[in-house]
Image (cartoon, rainbow, N blue to C red; front, top):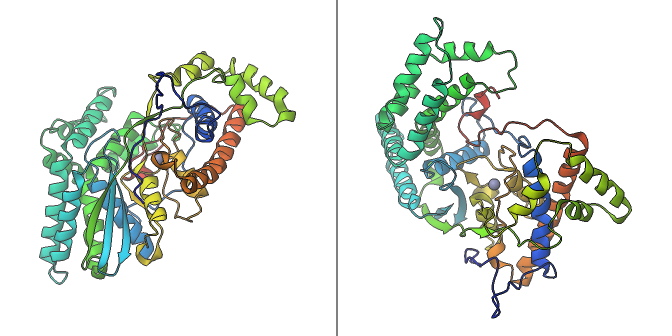
Length: 440
Ligand SMILES: [Zn+2]
């Protein structure tokens, strides 16, 4: 089944008025989903990870862990730009001819690169260590050459953070060493090599450990984080090459296909029920409507912020556009086309850790897919993976079943947030690269 045909969110009839409203079950479901999500996003979007992956510095020895890491690393190599526009997901289908790698992304530009990496791995002779080194170098260099935008952004972040740190006698050498890397932003290969051989990590760690509260990220921990990100291409290439050398049969006769993630959509259209009190009342049973009013009253004292106005404004026609995340879109592609996973390992690789909504969607999906590493941030711009196919009754029923469970979970999290009033948490980085070593 082709899931990628985009549809308009608000289809106009001959009178120029929208014909989507809450009497339509899909539109009603979208309201039910986005109202608590938006509120949660305004209150405390950093929900925390629901599942943590082993770090790249703690190698696993079983096939499944290595295969999943291989898929995540391949996805990373296919995600060239910063800011989430080129997020890529990769999964392996078992076919009679060999593994078929599916790449889900918004743009096709990464497909030739993935094909090139797989060809290089197939040609590599494992018996020749020099050839393995040469293959690793070729893959990391071609990936870095395509990722100049991302590397420049990391260098900008390094410079920005350096600018906020006061220079003292005990940190001059460290700051100079980091600065020397960041100013090479137009030479991506040199930047990545510089980060890989950075000699001052121990000194940097001491600066981070000296902070009184390690739960709060400091400029030092961010410097460390971006240096580790700049090492990613070389480190992930090593993972890819070692996997290919250890399991050559996975790549024998392999092929790859591209799956385009759908275009942007919009939040459901605002109507007379689009306000906080009304939304809270719909989240609670009839016998708890008083509780809804009390929670609504308590919102006013939460922060110096007009939640009501911001809530309603987000559902304006000019509100945020929604993006379907690559990993759940690819997951649905496997599900609806009955594709068989390699070694029946129902894992979708991705260039980033999964967000809060993707984690819930995977968790409540009937396909029993493997939970992905997650950063747990609730993005209100999360698009429904099957939005484009909801005119199909079978798809619509499936979508309803999964999302109803997601909505229940969302509501519980929101009500808990409102009642306990957790302090607003800082959003963690969403990269797959070495985040565990960031003192956050
Ligand atoms: Zn996501």
